Length: 134
Picture 1 (cartoon, helix red, strand yellow):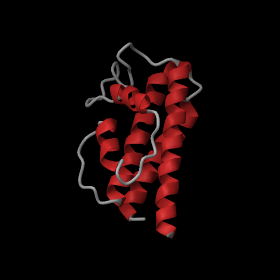
Picture 2 (cartoon, helix red, strand yellow):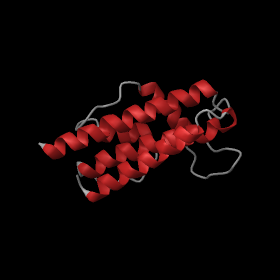
Picture 3 (cartoon, helix red, strand yellow):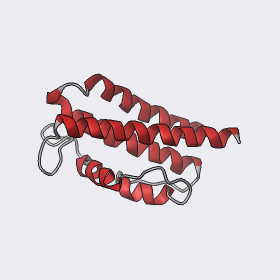
């Protein structure tokens, strides 16, 4: 595994670990959701680096996923990508960070985002480690 790939995965894991500390706090669902989006984005960017797909300057999860899909297709729930894409904002104003179009995510939504981010991260990490051993 390339050092840059590992750096992306390490950064994604930082987001997942942050979520683990925050996920049970009902008033922090927007922060949990934002970190979930970031974890998925960074996991996909790890694949982009490892497979030398190019330098991609986007935060759009659907676009990133379409780029890695020919090499590895880990995501089954494309609706979740759409929801997480709705959370990301270019600027990080406190009153907008991690909000869905309908407002602050519910605790259930935040937990779903967390689980999706964990699964995506672990599937990609296993794929990259398996390829490295081959």
